[in-house]
Length: 214
Image (cartoon, rainbow, N blue to C red; front, side, top):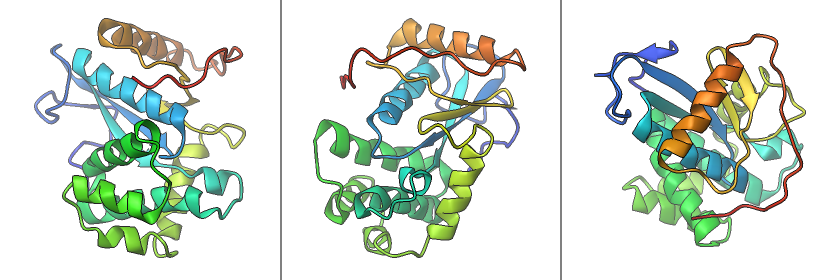
């Protein structure tokens, strides 16, 4: 699977995709469902953070279908395929598949079907057989385990995105659009600071805009 250590930090030489700063690389674990536009924008923010801070994001799968007790095929095909990618290629390739699939779903407005999943796999140079297997329950136990690992620490009254950082599990941040450059880094700095206090639980305000993809 991943060659990233399971601790919160790794040496700077371990991860190629870190920001320009020296020092230990902070690991952030990020749970997503590929159908969620808010998770998509938060994921793009985290990839931007990696450019400006010594941070590495490990992508994990949660399921809005499991969270809402739904067997809607549109809610299952993407998450099942992401688990299949993890099993076949390791944790670090999940981000590549998510980028390809999320681009098709959210920017390309492609249907949430096995053919779209197949196209994303093809773009990543991965076996398209994963798409066919994702129409079955083959990986459902693994999906459930990944989902529970991400969601139990933060509670079941939230959705995605979910971030684990500094030993804390948090829903969010929910952002639109995803900030770039130092704006992305500054937002991450703030997230780090609030997680430093063990009694911090929640900040929230009503959303006034929808997802802005750029």
